[in-house]
Length: 283
Ligand SMILES: C[S@@+](CC[C@H](N)C(=O)[O-])C[C@H]1O[C@@H](n2cnc3c(N)ncnc32)[C@H](O)[C@@H]1O
Image 1 (cartoon, rainbow, N blue to C red):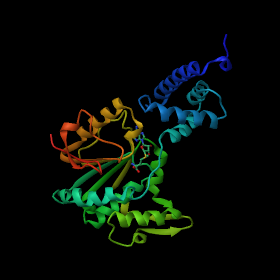
Image 2 (tube, protein in one colour):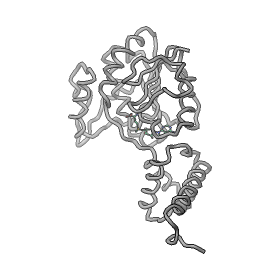
Image 3 (tube, helix red, strand yellow):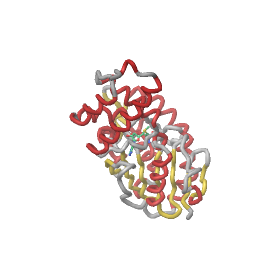
Image 4 (tube, rainbow, N blue to C red):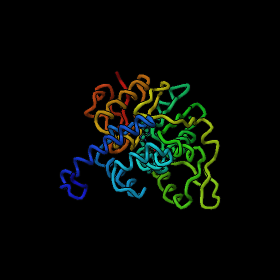
C-alpha cells in the first residue's frame, strides 16, 4: 500500500479534497454547523492551520478529533468564523447611511434592524451611536446575530481594546460623528467599556445564516463582510433569506466587496448607493 509520503502533489491535493469534504460533513452531522458551501480556498487554509495547531498531520486526523472532542470543535469554529471587525469600519458607509437611510427611517414610527454576522459587536455599538445622534435610537430595536456564541458574549460585554480608541475616534469623525467619541466609553485597565445604554435596545442572539430561518420582518438588514466567505450557492440562499426578511422598501447593506449584482434578487432591489453597497427592496 502506498504511504502518504509516496503521494504525488496532484494526488495529495485530491486526497485533501476528499478529507476536507468528509470533515465538513462530519462537523455538520455531529454539531449542525454547515461549512460545506464556504469558499474552499480560505476554508482549506484555515482547516490546515487547525490541523497543525492541534499537533496533527492530516485533515482526517482532525476529523477524528473533532467528532470526539467538542472543545476542539470550539477551537475550529473560532478559526473558521473570521471575526475581524472595527468600530465605524469603512467610515463612508456610516456617513452615507446617515445621508441616505436615516431620512427614510425618520418616516417610520418604529424601526427593526438586523445586524447579521455582528462578530464582537463593534458594528452594533457604532450603529447605536449613529442612531442615538440622529434621535432615532429610542424607536429602534437592533437584532444582532452571529453563528458564534463566544463572540456574542464579547459583544454583550461591550469592552473593546483601549489601544484601538485612537483609530476608532478617527473613524467616528470621518463617519460624521457629532460629539466627542470619548463620551461613549469609560477607560478601565486596558479596555474601553462602552455605555450600557447603547445596548438597551439591542437583542444579541445566536443565528446561523446557513441553516436558520428568518425570525422577524426588518426595515434594514446589515450583513457586512460575511458573505465573502460563502460560495455562490450559499450566497444565493442567504440573499433569499434577506429578501424574505425585509419589508417593502427595506434597506439591505452589504460589505465593500459584496454585491447583490449577479444574484437572482438583483432585479428586486434599487441601488441606494452603489459604492457603499446599499440597496432598497422595490419588488
Ligand atoms: C469578518 S466578521 C464581520 C463582522 C462585521 N459584520 C463587520 O463587517 O465588521 C464575519 C462574521 O460572520 C460570522 N459568520 C460566519 N458564518 C456565519 C453564519 N453561517 N451565520 C452567521 N454568522 C456567520 C462570523 O462568526 C464572524 O463573526
